[in-house]
Image (cartoon, rainbow, N blue to C red; front, side, top):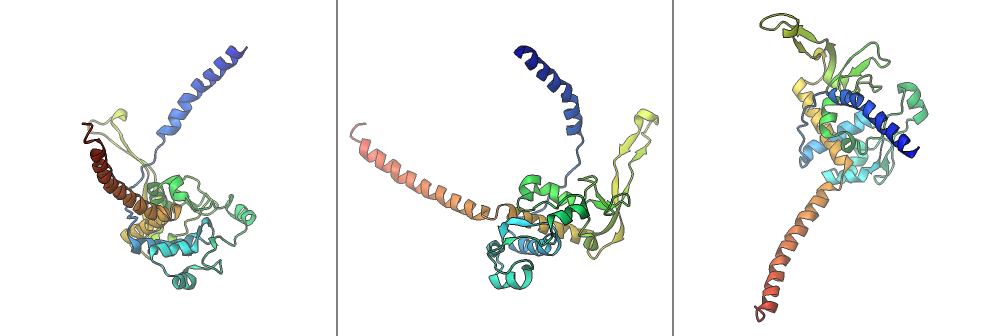
Length: 253
């Protein structure tokens, strides 16, 4: 009986393989995020965008306001410009929106963004924030190429403008015929410009993603610095250890 159960499980796994293969084949091209983790000015601009556009609905409950001092923002600047839902800089970045209300409005409560860059990746976030388009069939009026049927509205639409999705086109090949048709995927067209030019908006999104990468691991830069210093120390120690080893064993050899 045990052997039969094992065989049935194996057959079930084999039966699901085509499904998994089909799902893996549905791939959306992700643009490379032009971020620089050491660009303090970019991180500061990204923090400003995050607080003004994201923190109204999404929390970052594993991030404290005072960690923004790591990217060159003073405590007074944090209090004056970036703190809207807290009284002390040591508090976490939370939101006042009730989770039940958010679920009723958006269909699901907005996820916490503390480690979203580690979960999704910088390229995914960069592409996602640039591929919203108008879709009247959706409750919010917006849809996304990277995340189809997303429940989140396009909060940055005033900066980017409104895009429309143009359906896929099929062009005749050199020799014509059905098999010679070259299919082009759906494309986005800027139907209504925003406050920023397309290149300016892409740069703003890059700043925001740069900050989200920092927020996901704010101590990373410090750890890398400590790691480099540790390796340098061990390298110097190795020289003295080798010299000491030669001194101890010179009479043996």
